[in-house]
Length: 579
Image (tube, rainbow, N blue to C red):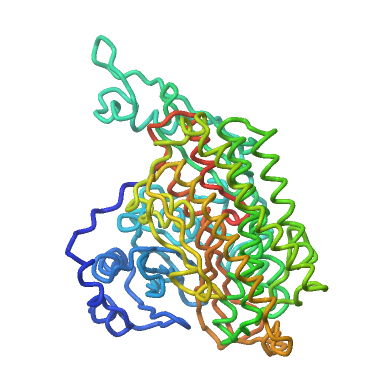
């Protein structure tokens, strides 16, 4: 069932008083007043411990009075003496302004208020925390398991979970989720879902449940959509996750910071964006270990990341042509042709075509391939061909009447609603939300380069397509400038890695959450250390996870083909959703 709309945000003229917003930890603590029990600052952001029954008021004050309107992630974990939920907040206007709200709850009855009435995007996050850790979120409109079947016994990330206990997952006939509570005689809300009355004024139940996926090409992976239809209209859709859950977070918790975690991030995105995921982990671990990356390595990272972004966007654009008009022979094959060029460049650089494992803490594993001049010439030749390729894509897609009919004014999500669900990347920028961590929370070599953030205000599937096409052009601009910098870089200053200790052991109970602008949006990593060389808690915030949480908001009331076009416009990847 879709979540309730966000509570209205009062217009108090905050835009005219941006400078007066509380920014420091002390100022935020003063704003929260008696709600704060104690401070629990993380490595780079202030943290505030609040009571389980003060979650909504705390988040509401931070959202409305401190402009921390982006709930980017919710992390749940169990300690020896307590459970804990952490709400990671940022500002869409300035993501360097951050805060963490820490909510401890007792071992016997782990529970706290749900954040959904303030941030609807917390819906999926809290369901995952309930499913895997066992925390109850009071007032959540749809608190049930997310990754595991409803019949599952126990919570896999709890300390007392019995891994040897057999689990029985019975097959049950699918039932219409709206039939009982909304499509019954005398229910005044029946008309809201397309019902009609017979001669006696009694409502007729005529909705139907249709399973889309999990093994269906339109779901872009192992995703199951439980769609409830009234005729051809979608009246409810429930994304059913967990079919490809691979315990990536738990595997990272068993690996060492220095050597064993870095190969995993590539597996969260098999669309080609793995280097961006590697950077997310590197940024979090480098912040935790206080590692400074050399400038030369930053340029190489930036170049590699943009190649990875282009590989992902080319796949997204080509597959979208298949989604909306079944175009395999032209657009899809053109996109694969250009993506092959990107993969060749990445293979020359990293030695791999998809699972790159090229980044290292403190830099990259090796320099450009020799001869350098030949590699940079090959890179420039590719960049020179991008404008002509984009002209072809615009002719085939954005100027195509079929594509326009399928995408314009479908899958609409307004800016404030997109923010309330934590949407980022092309999904948010397609709704006019000017938010890009490469510019707004600078890292790498991006601040030194000339490029633009692509934003469209159509709020629909068509706008999201235009954003990805525009970002291909901007990535080519970035690549050209990186090639110029790398070519002119002094030979004696080509340091590819900082002097990183062989063994990294951060302080006990240090916590950090850092994110990068991945191909699909904000990809963040939360790490809690315990004084050893492996993390005590490793949490992945995938952008596609939040976008699927917003998906019902975008498709309810639309037709079945619009639902497929909308799902394709999100460019979801299930590796970062299920993890």
